[in-house]
Length: 106
Image (tube, rainbow, N blue to C red; front, side, top):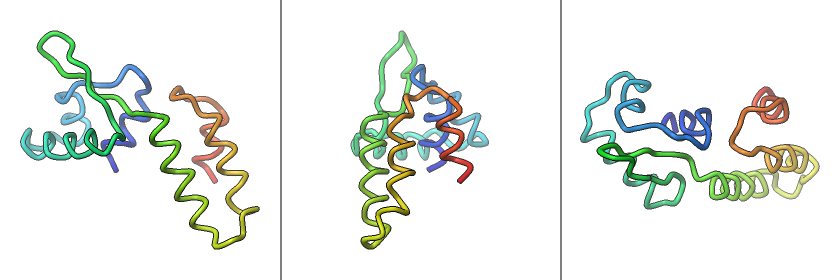
């Protein structure tokens, strides 16, 4: 979750594995690689080679679909509780905005 949260906050530009490791407190490369690989296979993040580095970024459409699915299932038929959050989340584009911050604070 910390990897996904970090990649969401840095936006579409993504970050290298080294930057992600530093943010997470210098976790061992093999452990980071394990988690990045699983997140990528799940379609929640994607990688792009940039010279000798691999840049990882959040896959916003997949994350949006996942959150919407979880929100719809969480309310046990009380959709008024979740509909507002789903609508606000759908407006998020991967760049910080007031709308995205409003969702996070609730």
